[in-house]
Image 1 (cartoon, helix red, strand yellow):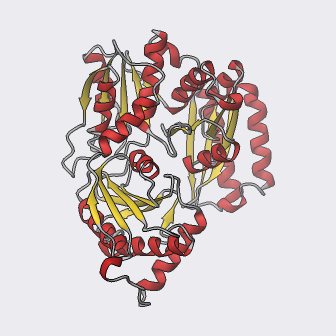
Image 2 (cartoon, rainbow, N blue to C red; image 1 turned 90 degrees about the horizontal axis):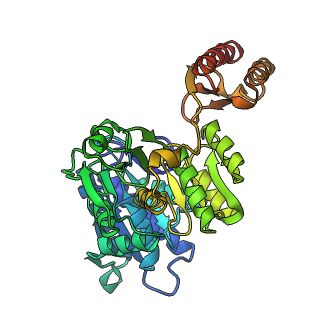
Image 3 (cartoon, rainbow, N blue to C red; image 1 turned 90 degrees about the vertical axis):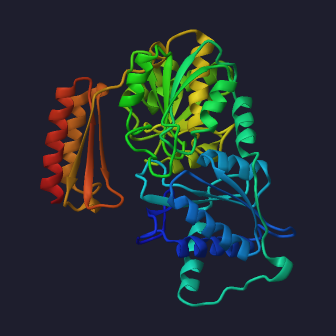
Length: 452
């Protein structure tokens, strides 16, 4: 697997890459590293452990719980809950550590482990690096210092997780959803219970799809990566809108009453205006990545909202938000972070806030989302090139300059080296799709010529 920790924890094929032995070892290592860092100082440590419904989550959960308890950490097992719910409960219950077992939108055979620090925040990179180092050291034979007797951790189920999390979500709503009919696609994932419960308690009439997880069907032809079922159901049921989550419900995409997709950029635009209206958009600023559609940037400029852009990845969005105390940020993929109410992307919260805006204004989602016009976007991956020379090639710089001159203010060019493969991603936006394709094709040729 190379370096274990990626941008979103440790992830791989369960029982092949990510084994029970690894899950146990990483959990013990995390407990020791946090103890060394002083996190457990002066009290008996507690961890919250949750998972999505994947079959492999059952044995991985057992391994994580065993590892933590063997290291002297008391464990609150919250069962199947969304990633943002585990993050919230880690903070709300005063736990020293949170652990979520999920591979998000990946196919069922995959799984992953994500650690949260006290308060429900992502672990610092240096702590992840230290956990990996300690894990490797002990995996190759160094013995652990193990507690005995009353020093071992105790394990109990925390059955109030759903109610605690749903109450938190409802407390974040500015208004109720009475009068709305909403279709929810839960991807047979972690939000299959809590999301319908929250929307129903908020006053909406709810129709559910993908809400019968069996451990094998997560993300299978449904959820935020497969919107066709939701689009058809919204039209069939005459619903006001549809909401789709992924397997661990940290993201949200939407569908308007006509069955048209509303992506993360459009959701951000709608929420930014709503939050500014109630003075909740601090510094009148929203944070997004460089992959956000140019139409989003133009819409925010027109509305007088400042846009701060980061590298691709919700972790970079969150870092910028926390550092500068911004209230709203997210990605085109539907990871939306409302920092006053969540420490990570929260798909259920995002969907509730979007629906609340529809209910509050009495305007259809289609009309609200039209605040921005998505410009045509063309993405070409150019393989087998030297990605390290993207910024230093004079030939490529000249080609980009010429493309930007041709597109003017109504287009945009982005060349981005892949972080994992020997390829360069060429992205072009323009007011006209044919122009976007033409410019992208020429730039792809230029990348091959300059870096091949």
